[in-house]
Length: 368
Image (spheres, rainbow, N blue to C red):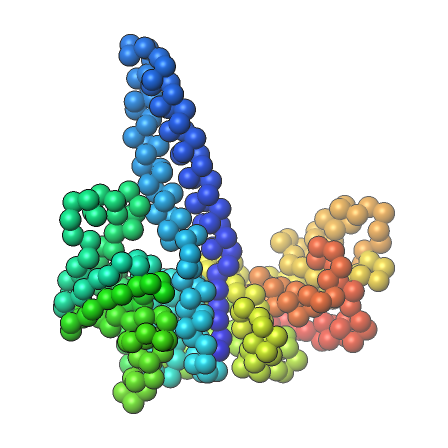
């Protein structure tokens, strides 16, 4: 199975959540201290009264972000476990497409709206019951974990992904289907004719995501081909299946995925799951040599300018260009090359490559 994770986005929002929480908490503490210790007529007291509501809003925002990006169980981990055993024909995108979690397989294209809440819920048609009562609503507001309207959010995510599908495969007849998935192991719900299928990520509970996908196999829904997936990859600056095959000396993506899974890898994509919105303009990959080590990187300017930067960073070293080539997805190609040679990495972007490795790199030609 192919799994594409925008790890950079996950890490960035986790850092922001931590910083925002501690800044707002410290600000509120200081504000309350000045409010209690200063006279009511002082400018400091008046200023703190203005700032405290803003800091409270920041705190609630940080709690919501922490719920989304930090709180356990994390959706990516739970869904990865739920996807195990689905097979090679599936592709999962996490935080790359307009919806946070998208699964593409033989049964169709699905957006997965994850629900963390662990308290019992009842679903009737399009109504959710479980957050009623003043105290529960107040507590849920402070914790920022009221369930809201998952159906509306799931439908919106499906509509956004449908726009991408219609763009890359306008005549395919593919219809993106939204699903609601409870990811907490303690979650419980009762559903009576729900507007959208509501499922458990845990395969031991019924109805589960895995059993749902197994049951819809006979419905013969249209789905995206490998060529369509490659178009999506290019739109978001990802390494395509063809790119990966070339970088792995003709090895197919599924073969690479099998090797990674056998080695216990978290991601099944050789090109480290690229960044959504990454720069997909044509760029240049350069390979330089200094002694027994080789540098692999992307030229942000001209090749000569990049070499000058390397020489300036190590004035006593003799650095010479070995090879360079253009590619339509420089960031993804660079990531794939670094993944390929990761066991030979010595320091930063310098690698101890063999003569065979260098010969293979020199065989890379312009791919733009």
